[in-house]
Length: 304
Length: 314
Image (cartoon, rainbow over all chains, first blue to last red; front, top):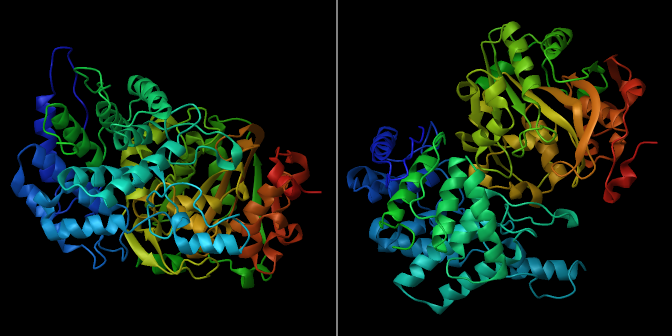
């Protein structure tokens, strides 16, 4: 999968889009889900493929994907990364992004409930109590606002926190709730606190052992998307970094998230088109490119 | 599973648990390799031959250390060394040789590999490479249990290989002192399940998890890229360190202990080596049969951050 040439006046790459939708349909597994590249079905690529197909009006294939997703939901309300795994993880945020209109009200409500009940382990009362008793912490207060972990029982990081915020923000606009707004606000403060010194975000460790580390394009775009509507020096600095990344970066994954992050703040250059030569190597990369293109045309999965 | 069959078939690639260590000393090669050039192809053929790795008709997975977008490859295992090894195993009769990695911070693995020069150096890289972060998985219980993790989901590509070749970079590491062939196994833990970073391993104890993973893969060969390593605040933010050696052997513990000595780090002060070595005999210098260069002739002190000054050898 390779991006086509992008003429200055060409609004979108329609032939590529048609090819990519066909690619997604062809790569759908028999069970209705999608792999990342090859093999069995996984939650993350399946969610992104569903988003892309729904954006293109390909509902039959998308709904087969939805059926597969519903079939692997867990009793605790969350979703595992793939059926082989017996634990709900961060991918529940992705399923919640699909909304009740796609997943059904009950499944969606459970996904949102799982997200609301999940924090990084360092924010839990039990962990804080243990740290205090061990003398590692001077008080029972949290050091930073709660974010979301990749896997429950571990620390919060930029990626899963951003995805959870995107899902809850969409839910809050659908059905406003002070509890949800509280988690979104806390999650956003977590992100602002994890920004790199020079702007932007990496995976969430901006000063390991006190040594400053640099930002990544993909996480900078993702965090900026989660900080839509937030005005702060960290956001301003990150927007500058993201613009630079957008000019220099040739990674499909990174460009997808940079497009979303910059668009969230009205900073995506008008008529932006992915540079030629960018390789779309995975189902998430292909799907998200289609999702971003559709969003830039007004069919928005994230904030529509 | 191929995992079981392969163990019996790979002559000489038997497990070296602590009990086996005393019975048979491990052989570790230190081979001079002053630069990343064409001579590496002969060097790697020689290493495969010296260690009598009978891979005829077998599947081999090369697992380099790919960490960051960095064209100079001070952070990543150099692609020329990986390709030379790839060719050496094919020449030795391997039925298949694949390159596989699952980076811990960056999601876009193939883009990272591209930036590190793998597409340029390895013909048809796309066809031989497996992103271990996105591979299908099987739940396993490590044979030795050092960490709190009772089960691990590991990639089928690695579990099914007859021989896993850990191709690490010789680097200091700001959490565990040194990252070598055993720490490199973190890249086999799939991020699609555990995240970027693979934080489960940190919460369960980094050193304990390294020892667990070492036990989870009994059919290994270790190759450490010490041509240019990294000192100081490794494994990402350190500075290049020219050593000019490739260190290799069947026993990862012995290889990593030897690398530590080359770096002038005391292997007995590296927590995961102490854990996995049990009675320490495997990492004792006297119990390792050194071939090629002598440690004293290639020893190159690696700068250590203040937090790790205590691991300095001597």
